[in-house]
Length: 102
Image 1 (tube, one colour):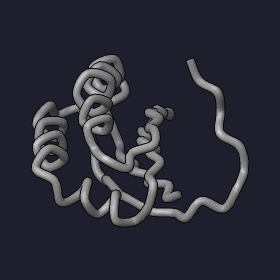
Image 2 (cartoon, rainbow, N blue to C red; image 1 turned 90 degrees about the vertical axis):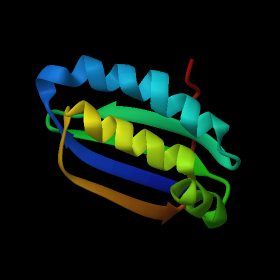
Image 3 (spheres, rainbow, N blue to C red; image 1 turned 180 degrees about the horizontal axis):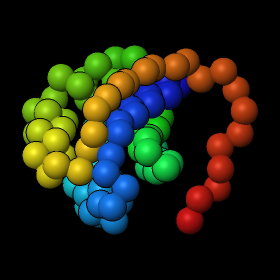
Image 4 (cartoon, rainbow, N blue to C red; image 1 turned 135 degrees about the horizontal axis):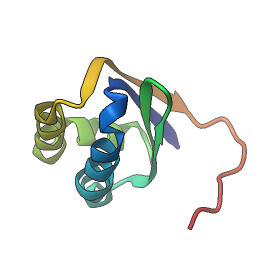
């Protein structure tokens, strides 16, 4: 399993809009991609994390190459609530437990 962590700055005054976008646009996009095992959106004070779980590195590469992903990224950037920098890191799963979420 691969853990993909995308971080971005954001305008805290627009957190509700960002959460709405994440749940109405980004979440369905992730669900459409083969190999996506789950995703978590986690806002902090000034940084927003999207943590997604993938079957393998090929699945993460397919995501980033897809038009669906590119269109979603373009749409979220156009909304204007993100701030630089944006960063993506991939990690190999090393063990642990996964939460049981609603």
